[in-house]
Image (cartoon, rainbow over all chains, first blue to last red; front, side, top):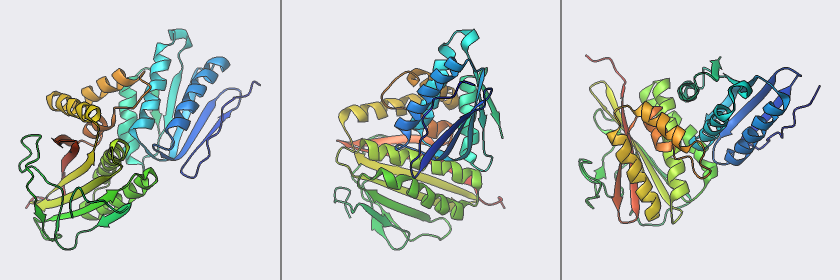
Length: 126
Length: 207
C-alpha cells in the first residue's frame, strides 16, 4: 500500500489528522480554523490535492465534526482547493465528502455555500 | 472616552451606566460621520439597548475568545441558537477584519441589542483606522452588496472571483451578508472606518 504523505498540524487551537487505508483518504479537522490556522490549512489542502492525484483516489472525506469554527480566510482555502479540482480534466476530478456536525450551526450554511460552488463535486453528510 | 484615546490591550465595557462611544452618523443614510456623540442609556429595559463594547490592540489570539464570550451574550439575550451562531460568525469576521486592517493596531467592536415588539434588533459595529487602499476596497464591496439583487449569488461570484487569488480572502463581508444574513453598511471619516452589520431576530411571539 502506498502511504499518504501529508503533514499533520498540531497547535493548541487547531489540529489535523489524515489517514489512508489504501482505499479511502480521510482528513479530520479539529478546533478553530482562524487566522492562525490559515497558512497551515492552505498548505495542507495544496498537499492533499497533490496526494489525491498521486494516489489516483476518486474521493476524499473531510471530517469537520470537531471543527468549532472556520473563518473566511480558511473558508477561502477550501474554495481555492475546490476550484483547483474543478480545473482538472473530468477524468482526474475527485469528489469531496464533508462530514458535518449538526451542533455546529455555522457548518450548515458554510457547507451549503461550498456545495453550491461545486455541486457535482461536493457531498455533505452528518 | 474618545475614539482616539489609546485603549488598553483588552478593555471591556459592559452594560452598566452611561458612556460615550465613537461618533455616529444619525440615520445611517450616508457614509460620512456627523461627529455627533450619542449617549447610550442603561440597558435591559424593554426598548432600551443592551450592549457590549470591546477595545483591542492587535491580539488575534483573543478573537475566538471574544467570539465565545459574545455567543453567550447573544444566547442569553436572544435564546435562539441559529441566530447566535450567525451573529457569532459575523462578530468574528468583523473583528478579525478590524484587527487585521487597523493601521495603528487599535480597533473597537460594539454589539447592541434592542428589543421591541417581539423583535430584537442586533447591531454590530467595528471601528478602526485603515489605509486608503483598504478603505476603498471596503467601500467598493459595500456598494456592490448594496446593489446586489441576490446576496447569495453575489457571495458565490465573490468566491469564484477570489478562488485563485493568493492574497486575502475578500470573503468576510459577503459571508456576513450571505451566511449570517445581515445587512452591511460602512461610514468613513478621513482614515477611520466604521462597519456596521444589522439584523432582526424574532424573540417573542407577537401579541
